[in-house]
Structure formats: C-alpha cells, structure tokens
Length: 486
Image 1 (cartoon, rainbow, N blue to C red):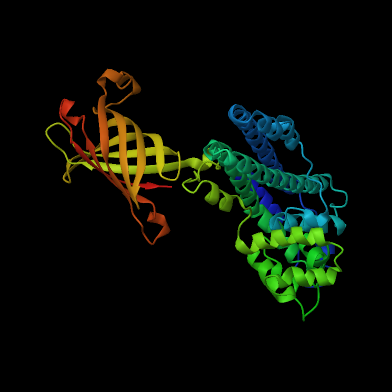
Image 2: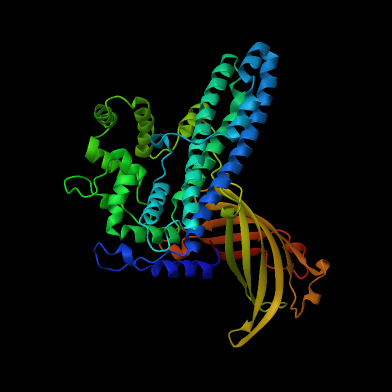
C-alpha cells in the first residue's frame, strides 16, 4: 500500500472520536471509521486466502503426480496391492481442492489474531455506532474473515489427510522394502505443511492498521465484556468479564494480538490445571457429551503448549533422518531477496587516480546457505592525493556473484564482472563491450557479528581477481571490500 494512503488511514483512525473519559457515553462519541480502513483489513485476509488456495492446488497436483509414479513402481512388484492402494487417488486429490472448511464452532483451526480482529469488528458492528450500522465494507470484511477461517479449517483437514496417506503408503512400501521410493512424496507433504504455516504466521503478524484498530477496541470498556462473551476463546472457556477472583479479560488483551500461546497456557493453568488435568476437568464439567470435541480441543492445546502447529516435523525426522529442509522454499520471491552495498578503494598509480568502487547488489537466496545475485558499481575518482582532490567518473561495472556458506559466518565467494576502467562523460562512450575488462573473482567473505543492529550484517570480503593478469594495464589482483546487507 502506498505510504500516503497508509498515513491517511492511520490519521483517520487516530482521529476516531474516542475520548479519555471512562464512562458509558464513550461509544456515542465514536465517529464512523472510513470504509478504506475495512477495505485494507479485508485485502490482507483475502490475499492470505488466495495464496493458501493457490499453493494447496499446486501441491495437491504434485502429490497426485507423485502417486501415479509410485503406482507404476508398485505395480511391477505387486499389481493387486497397487490397484488397491491407489484406486481413486486422482479423484481424491481433486476433491481435496474443494474440501469444505465448514465445521463446528469448537472444531475451528484456532487463530488468535483472527479471533481478535473478528471480535473487534463484530463489536463495532453490533454497537450500532453512527455510520457503522449495516456498513457494507464492514460486513464484507467480516465475511472475508469467515472465509479465511474456513480456508484455515480446509488446509488443516488436507494436512491431516496427507499425514494419514503418508502413513498408509509407508506401511505398504515398507513391507516390500521400497521405502526410498517415498522420499519425494514425503518431501512434498512436508513443504506443503510448512507453506501453510508460513502463510498463517504472516497473517498472525499484525499490521499497524490492525494494531490501531485493536487498540481502539481495547480502549472501550464495553469491549472487554463483549470479548469475554463472544470471542471464540471466551466462549470456549467462559472468560469472566467482570470477576476479580477469576482471570480478567484485560489480561488477554493486547494490541498486537489479543491471544498468544503463553496467555492461553497461563489461562489454562489457572482455570483447569496442567497436563492431563486440563481435559479431565473439562470432561467432568462437560458431562461427557462433547468427548469428540474435547479430544480435538486437546490436540489443539497440546500444539499450543509445545509451540508446534503440526506433527510433520516429527514424522520427517523418523522417515527422512538426513533430510534438511530448505527454509527459503516456502517464502515468497520478494522475501528471498537480499539487498547489499559495498565499497572498495584503490590507491593511485601510474595509470589511475585514487578511486572508490561503490557497488549495489541484489541477491536471491537459493537456501539458507547459498545465494546468487547481480549488481552494478560506479567508480568514483578522488584525485591523486589529499592535496589534489578532484572528483571524477572513472568507470562503471556490472557484477554477478555467488556466496556459499563455508562454516559459521564464513562464506566462499565468487563472481564474474565486466568493468569499464576509463573516465567517461556520456553513455555513448561505454556502450561497446569490447572496451570493458573482465574480472574473475574468488575469495572468502566474513559476516561480522556486531552488537549494534545497524552494523550487524557487515560483510568483509577478500577476493582474488585471477583474470587481472590478462588485463592491460594490469589491475590490482587482490580486492578488499567492505559492505552491508539488508
């Protein structure tokens, strides 16, 4: 979103008429929020929903193709088992693309941030504030939150099915000594689940607009009661709205995200105990009527306590002990980019004045250890010495590079560069590549660990230009560069 528009939204929110007085007439003085606010909230949820849908379809297609390959391999060993195990698998994967996310209230895949936002908007909607009653954009955003909840539920169902399917295939293929054939299938399952977690984490990270909206809601006394009564968390655990002896709803209100794993754990410990006592107490209070829902809720709580959103990590450790996931694979293209700048200075000699090469680069992270990229440099001339300073354009360069992690913060670095090593005053002088010199670089890079955030990603490079000896005039073979990545 363009910065001026964001500032406009924030300005509109800041100027919502919420007074500092803590009285019952506060809601009457709250003016309407602009439609652009609700539109911005809805766009974020819609974007996450579309990404989940797109990635789900992509991975299900991959897994379907992988099962077809497995079917052919198994058919050669046991045709009847292959027919039994894979019959209807293509249709199943197609059906999973359109699986419904409609479930019972307490079976929802829980998202603290989504629960907080949905409750806040429902509060504004139900409060009948001026300009918000039957507001079309507000209603649309609430509907999009419901759709996003359904998509979370659907991806959770798909993930559960894939785990079940992985177990079925493993059991069948193990009997025939064909476990290695399942490696690719299991990797696809892992990366799908990791991708879903990545998108959910992106949604859970609150924007400034969301923080401001939740802050407005939190500042209204009536919202605490509303939250304790109508939020998913409040309805599950009957949060007290005004009970000094119990857990006050204020304790779980936070402008970034109203519920966190630690808050849930603390709340459960205070209200129903620890460990197995949680479900035991809930079953006693529930009369045993909701055993299935309680079991599902127990799984969610165990996941929240352990910080694990799924069991795919443990499964992968057992199935593929030597598998090292690519942590960059689930990130978007833009999030895999790394920008950098560096400078390299050379003293004057017979042919060149004192110069500094100022470089800019953009790299793409193949994985957590390797990065490739391109860049450009501008050669600034400073004159012959301190008494003869004269700024001049002494050349430009085009760069490509690759960094491969060696150990710790050390990297093996290499690259190929084209450099125009002559003063120029116009583009016409530099457009012929036969006048450019080639450089082949190989060396070591060190990323410094500094206490200050500003210089935490400082990189020092020592590079050998093994093509420098072919250049006329011969340039400096050893290059020392200091840079910063961000």
